[in-house]
Length: 393
Image: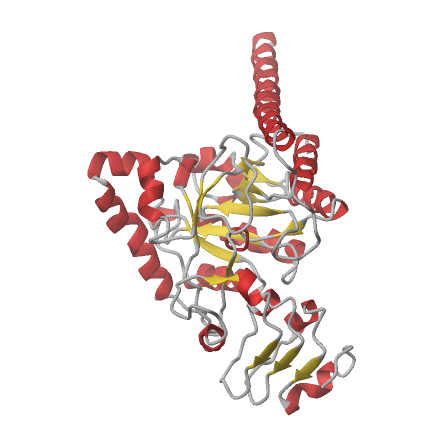
């Protein structure tokens, strides 16, 4: 019994020492970057220059956990997260995602979250491309997930997934050749683990570093709070990598995924810790972004809305629509365009006039984020719902 206690104490001591070294190095590199460069202005302009954080969750076999404990925690277009998905369940016979799981992912998307690419079969990019060639890795793990995503739809709403803008390397393993093959041909940005300083500027194309905040790595939120203060000072952004979102008291074995899943079960974070990070971010007046937003890219659920928006930008054929370009638009006529969903309108932060006459929209909540909107025309059937808003019709 005594020897077992000694072993346990050594493991705990080792874990805390690892955590101390991990975060000490991150903080040191960030401080070095900040104190040797000119600090940016922290002008409070949403989606443009206001520093913020992005929660980046990996492995979509965890989707029921994300939805159950994250949906209300994150809210509607409030605390946004990026959910990096595969097409299959890591356990349960490595089956493809069920329709119920697809519906949950699409419901998360409908609440303002990003659904990003994490490999069709979650292949280790570095190992797979070294063994079979980089072209085989692209053909076997990158392209198939694009196809799979395109073929899915919600069982009730019939809503579709957006085309992924960003990619998260499985196991955070990659090499420079992997990045060059993916960016910008397939993605605007790709996410791995740590880099030199872990601060990400806006509108950045290329590699995004991330900081692991799962309980396996993090036992004291004080480290994250200090890191967020440094991000605030720098004017840049942070990406926090995590996996399962489940309360501390839940036993991983209760999910019934067997002994093979136990290692995956160590990668988890509790809603309590996430809430503590959210509260600190709000205290520091940090924004909450998806990784696509940090990359400066606007996305739309409704294809008809995207088609209309492209008529207002300088290069309608560009695969990526720039948030900064949309932020400069002041008037928008979207009347009679067969639009049903307003996702993407949150990027028109300087919009003053908007015509939505004769469309099929039933949810206008996102317009409440447009503080400069003064002149709004809505479909007549819905006007009565919004007479309390401080808007001129």
